[in-house]
Length: 449
Image 1: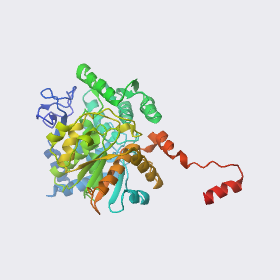
Image 2: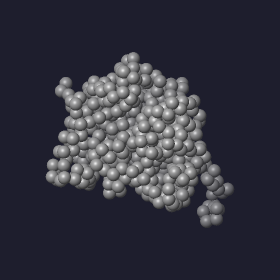
Image 3: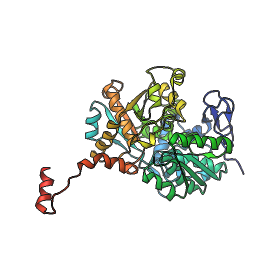
């Protein structure tokens, strides 16, 4: 098979010792020298110079803006992915050398960024400029599609015949959908009884082999890593760094929405860590190609699953954070997609929070569920994981970490329609039971209750 790109154009590099590996040939996704996680690196000069020639400008950052803005306005349902996908719009930044014939896209990434409604602004604190990027409005209903399109495209280019993932629900839906589009077999490992019915049915409808394990996500991930290490099973988890390349687009979309000005803060819920890792990598990439970057990352975890928040101390070094870190046994939470006691990408989260001069926050169960309900009053049905991030922002405002008038964008990771059971359980008390079927009785309840 002819290679999609050379190992000098795009390659893997260990985040700890710098060891380099071939992205298309890699199957273990751990550094053989130190067992560190890989980052993906590209030689960006040729593709970005090619973009500069489009307008023959000496201001490369301005050139990128023009090209990316042009693509955003020109996509149609029959366009190629560079025009129709909100992810591949930024191809030169995420996977510049991949031929378009390998791209597996479901037109993901075309999601709205909205100003927080009245009730949410009042709840968080009306002193900040608050927005939400609604990444749940993507094909499988979560932000995982941003990374899934890149990961499955690389799998196709590498000749992979089957993929597998451990999941709390959203990754399994993404992996199954994009594998179906790529005609690649897919298996998913789920913790039995710990995912919602909607999340369980998604990989089934996409044709994946669904296997439930009698444990939690950390048990599923342990089995998954053993399968990768000992049986060369191709991972669809964020252990595979091609996922992170696509997730970076969150940063690019936010910048584009604000006319290429980045906000003061991006707040993300932290489960397995891919979201926070990719936001940080995306911010560093924008700085590398000439944009002014001042953004801090607010990483948010629930009290039931907060190993990173427990070990974090303000302004410590990455090494000190790593030394303090311990995995935990998770508790129960409605935010099941973030119910992870030993995140695979924990070191990447530590790196990105620290390098951005960011902060960590922990959300109580009460506050994260209240945040979901308040978003609903503004017309947005978000997932409990988004509730973690919103509660984290509220706490950061209270603690003085986020200052008055600062612009904050919260990453809403999934649609609330995947979590209707928890939402309805928390809101059933609002249901009014009419004592009769008389019209007058109903009218009285409408007008006076």
